[in-house]
Image (cartoon, rainbow, N blue to C red; front, top):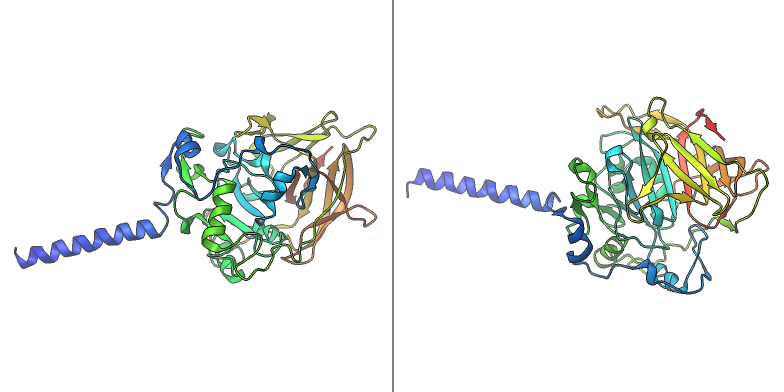
Length: 386
């Protein structure tokens, strides 16, 4: 063969090999396209999915994250793992999301452009589908850091522009990267996968999913993280739970709560309607549509709704979408809604590793009603109607 053609062929082979090597190791092939049927049945994982309906029996065990009373079977599961926090988006094309109803705690704040995002905390219950999963933000890392030593943090990439909003840089500095940080960019299919049929017709960025079982099992097998790390250090050695209380009945309950995150962004406005029958708050958003979990096809509800007022500022890091910062460390005003009652109080988080806590007007720590806790972080000065 002509030497010239041999050289050209060698270069082409090198370029092709380089492309596929990069494509594989960068994670762009890790999230393969699957259908909901495939995700539900055929995807192999190292560990079985948990059917919550089979975890039956007396509810005698207190979840240490939100106080919900669950069965001994639930406890056998959660005692062998650590909190899992997952970034879930709230773009209108991402609705209905999957898995929010199974979270122990949910934090909500604007990611950018008035579009809110969720940090869902899972520990005591499982869910077969979580998503759509999106990218990391600094203030959500601060909130995740309150869940003991090295909580699992699942996301798809993240803010990485140099400056105060550099989430990926912060994960490296914390020692989370390739440890408790479950970044889809470095984790192979099928732990994360793209499902184009779960919410048909949306852009690719709204199609990333996983499950609690997949993420906990990946952490166990690949990062040696269960309820202890590879040096036998327990995640909850220094973790202090919130205080909890049972449901109660109040006279003249507050029946409706409403607030905006950003003016002019009605798609992300929130309304909570109190149900005296269930002593829960039913969530609606946008133009008043019920906020549905696709897994259950039921409206989301929480036992505790908290609005935490925090200073919002622009990172001014040159990112076209405009990265934001929130003053998650320190203290500020808060409104706490539970059992139909409205409590004017404060939030406090002394440092990154501390759990955020809430206090009433006299300085007493709020006892959470057993069950899901939903914390919305809104800019200081925003109005809440109730």
